[in-house]
Image (cartoon, rainbow, N blue to C red; front, side, top):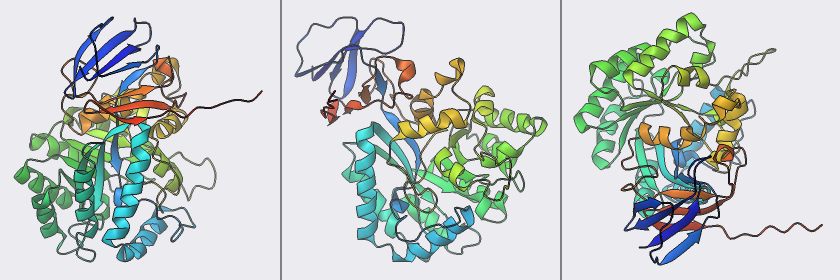
Length: 407
């Protein structure tokens, strides 16, 4: 066999396991495996988890915070700052920043990424083509899904609808959209589904990104998803407006989301930064109601969104830090809640973006991460070192850094 992982902890309260990996797959999980392997890694009781899934990211806009700051911290200024900078982006610039971002993220155990790559008639496909290039270049380190993302809208930006079809022909994996930044929003959603059906691709929308629960199109999206038979193939990011709804209005929407099988990517780092900027007291968290959505049967995920730009002027690509932030923000630190957070960066987003053969089971792809903690429940709150990252059955990251405390 290629790799033998010995004495790994898969679940708290269970015996340690040995895991055999051959030809990119997990071929055995047993209490003791004695066969020879090209490489043996003794976990000594440390926790092994499936590769982390970064389900909502913008590689093409990363690492530009130092070029023009968002002084007010508002969404409005973030959009205007970015719009001003976009014409200065060259292919070489986007390639360099996106590559540096990938090199930040991968050592933290992310083995799959869904990235939204934007285009419009003004900037063309410069960034989109670059991200497709990096998808191919990094295929041995991380699986990248590229979303065709019309950031400036489709209807209000003539020529964008044609570009959406062209982007799908160029190799986009997902049809993106942003109904709250277009009018009418329902027509925007219709166009997105028309394209998705033509190419048999999933849908991923930026949706309901607002402090207030007004001008929402989520009910229409739910009905459209069911009508088109797209249950389980639609995702939405942000969804912050839901936090402003009273229970009597929120509960029916949650039920509709669950029925439609729509996954939600909570983006707390961005939404905390941009949200509720006009609140003078009792400042709201402006993050989608994660616990309520989870309890209502919605597939909840946690993702990073942006790294060091006008929307999120911080971050280092470590999705565990984002998950850790989500625990206090979403009131997820209770004994029964904490264990539900790790799946929000593993199994849940894997389901949301349609990963096949994901997870630690015989026959599945060997995309796993060995964490420097011996308690699975502490896999996030320890923010443990990622000792080994294994992608497609090969060690892609090995952390051998030694920390010495001088007493």
